[in-house]
Length: 495
Image (cartoon, rainbow, N blue to C red; front, top):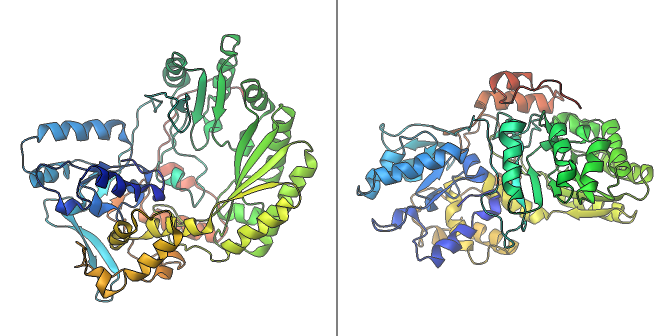
């Protein structure tokens, strides 16, 4: 199972039960399946889900998955434990049962260590460094995005906003070449569908994106329906808007995070108000009728005045482009592993600020789509916890769509009866208070549940970026030196 979002995790237990597979890896017998998973959530912090997996694949799967499958075939006939020990030697493969979390007498995590010296002490996520990225293998009307051929245009993001898992965890920024990578992928999809989706955290920052658009805009492709994911405001042009409008789009999505320049500087969102207004103007002039902006509340150091700045920006945008339908999708900041803001807690004032934004902007004719504050709390619980959360996830299955059940069961998990009943992890200390995981900001000296898993940047670099962020510094030159960006050589580029 590949987990892209924290709340995907509990679904795994439902699937295991449907197939009559024991939930806990420690209870699976020789003839039972090896359960493996990957994806950004498990690569960032697999510990809350670790006791349910036999194998976790960390990082990009292009090479890692074939290596894993080949190793399974190679070890067929060996005992289960022997197979897992063999797999543990492969870079990027994490076998949770071969590692044990260790705690202080006070119940604080002090590390996750291998059971023997034959097992690697740390595991490094794998990074795909070839010229090609992914595109759809299956196109079906039954998909979440029906009948669309998805093409990955970029991987990671060069902007590196301090909260962003999609950027930090997937470094370096990679862009497949137009002629060798993107065009063949699109042509393959066009044999099955007329709907093409261009995916990536910042697709318009591909160095050949303009050339790609012009290729798609040829007369022979006039019947193609083209979709793009969220774009960076500073890269929006009138040409982009016109081409998207011509190919069936009515709106575009941009992430601005906040209307406050102070907050945008702190989070390293290198975006000015002037660029936001210019992009909005191009979107309107290009024939698109809607603009969705992504915002966030509860970011570190945020004040009421920053929320007012977001409201004022939205109102000025509405005034400057009459007739353009504006929507603000706004979520609560959730700390993510391997980002500079992993030490920051959720701001409890975010709940009130979501309501303020909704109330005041809706009254001015701007649609607001707030993400649930309650579910942001559960995301945080999963993103920051260690293995002691696993019994809670097991107990909440079947009612994981109830916020009340999550809180009630977590509270119960700190009691003796719950912890000692049907719990393979009862030898571990009971989990810390709910508030400590969700709302508390941790010292950078805190031992984190995922520190035995190596991401793209060293722990010390993340600390430096955390300190830079909170002092208002927004440069990332040291990152660009430490992570080589993999991009094609481009000549005569036209912007």
